[in-house]
Image 1 (cartoon, each protein chain N blue to C red):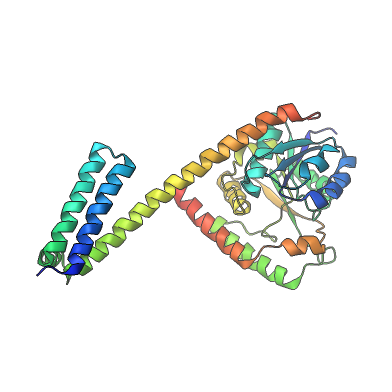
Image 2: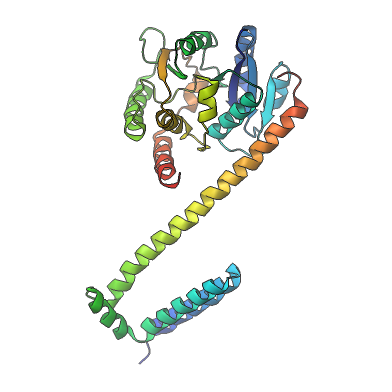
Length: 225
Length: 112
């Protein structure tokens, strides 16, 4: 590996599926950091089987907080490339290399998207509708229009990672990242990625109530920043 | 001549005042403010016509309405202050948990 690549995986009670996720990632030789957000299941034991870094929050803070902890850790370890990756197997390990290639072309941060190509992913219709609404909402709030409102697969350069200090602990972090990208005028681009929908991950999906909470959080964020 | 509601409100104001002072372990300025609020509150409770006079000065029809409007603004301000404090606390907690997680990672990990 010519560059130090750190893959940050925030995780809350994903012991069932994280094993497969790690098995898929290991062959690529990236440095992997699992941030356990106070899981109450066997996550720690499952992760212990693999040569990956394991960090644990004593209390559950949220995915945004877990990501930031992982980012802080990776930066301390002199990471040059930082990847955010979901624990539940939605993301495809092979997409990471494609996204890193975009960093080399000059982008500071690369966002994975499930929408730029039709053939690759089977997005359920209601989810698709909600995501489209969310991306326009994000545009109003952040000034950035992406094709995918909430995709956990991102690749960023060290420079971008140092500038992106996530303060939103819960689900509003995705929107906060966009706000920070705009604020620091980072160069961004989108790359189509493969999203695997299993019964498990579909069951977890974001509800409308969730979206309103994010809206509320971003509103408060803007006032109290 | 004294209504029951006046007794009720007066009791409420006095109890709230005393409780706030004790609970907040208030500074001198807070004590003054609490006393002032209590005094004005009791004044308006026992001489409601006073509130009407003040209201007319401010351009509001009724004393009760004026008190209502002012209360809304006051409570909104109070809530914002409380929320800002809560937010700050949450950030402090996050920092503690994060620092501990990073510190313990040094003990736990075999590979970087």
